[in-house]
Image (tube, rainbow, N blue to C red; front, side):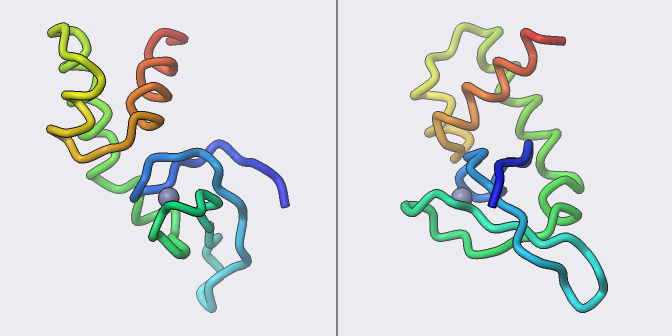
Length: 92
Ligand SMILES: [Zn+2]
């Protein structure tokens, strides 16, 4: 088991491990956050569509001076997700 740079689509946590492959040969991932109800997921799902839009919304709210707590409540994402998104934004 090792950490990879993938965020869980449900909790936004990055404690995600590789978890075998689907019969189609796609990489399957598993969230390692014991408080998260997400079981396993495929990167294709989590990265198509919804993810960039959520990140855009997080960045937009931060720029408008919204508190992190308000952002998590409005968008339904975790604090970890907000922080990792903003950190990534600063690195760009
Ligand atoms: Zn999760």
